Image 1 (cartoon, helix red, strand yellow):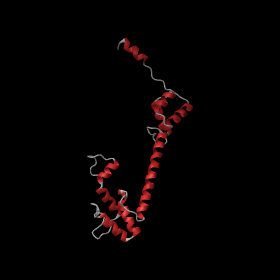
Image 2 (image 1 turned 60 degrees about the vertical axis):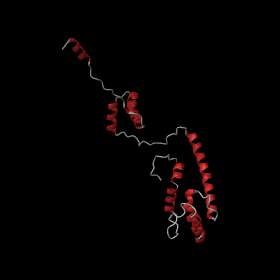
Image 3 (image 1 turned 60 degrees about the horizontal axis):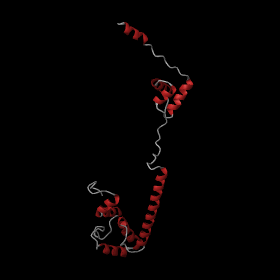
Image 4 (image 1 turned 180 degrees about the vertical axis):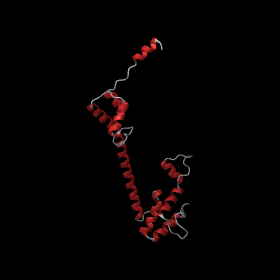
Length: 191
């Protein structure tokens, strides 16, 4: 061993343990349990991270389950709320217009300008509310369209509502894809 190595060995001293009072450890625990990271707590209170982990284990420190609150939208809450309100009011107006159209049609008015996606429902409800005579007349008028025969079975009965919805969706797949924003060449098996 050289003299330099011996001198360096003499200078290596064991690390002194940091002894902190219980009041400091109470603050450390409070900070860690409230969600602060172990490293930042250890630095702030001048305690070692391994000592913090040992205390945590020995004393059974726990953190409450993380609760993810709502994430603020990019545009901020006020702009988000304004946009949502506008959409709500527009949707409300559209639903009211649809309700008025449906009431008029279900009272015996012409089906010609009926909303496409509600056509099966309209035929079903007109048959139920207005009787067989109107149902027969509706079927005769529908024969003038390419899809007219598809909605009724061989005996002239209107198909079940769920089947009508699917048939109309399939018959007007391109229109549906445009309305929901599906470009050509993607998700081609839908609807």
